[in-house]
Image (cartoon, rainbow, N blue to C red; front, side, top):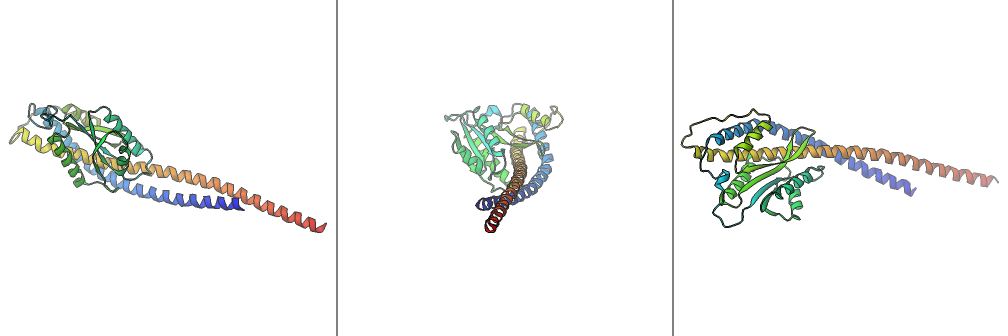
Length: 299
């Protein structure tokens, strides 16, 4: 009977786990739907800014701007050159390999950079890189909510100010790119300094037409227009990465909870079969004892 009770307790625990995984699956599905809707709404705006930035970069020529590679933010500084890496992870786990893949991609990028400084978004990433040899410049948490434009602006202002002050000479962002509902992968891209060639590749990779070099007249000057538009472009990159990472996280969590629910259901079926066998054996033993006792009395 003790064995039968143990099986009952295990079945109860699996049922409770199954309820939790199904609830988390529904929540993740709802958040994923919201994240993808926001991503689809912001994509045309970001694509337009991306193309405008390429048009500017392809014709500004020798404009003296700090956003160009040769400007070398902090070139007059005696401090060693640093590179900033903005890593976007989640504040919660139970999302399969989502966080592990991002952290692995960020670590691989850091190995190729000089004196990397980390700016980490998400509690999981903070805990992971606390044990790494790389220094953390700043840590940010959104408390598992969908980031908005104000969040992207604050991160962009921090990145550009540190870059222009010469704290680091280049900045990269590592996030999870959502190709489709069944395919996500960590991706790294350079934020600053800006490069027309890389921007052209990104436009082509996103499905846009190849941009041709155009000539424009700028008022009051090309440098003024470029320096005014560059922060908006960087904010668009950061905001797009934040929303895409959020949608990818919910997609990974939905898939993980769906798989966990299937495993729990399978385990419950196996336990139910085991319970029936144990119960049948217990009943058979009781009947045998009763028959044996009756036979002994008749003798």
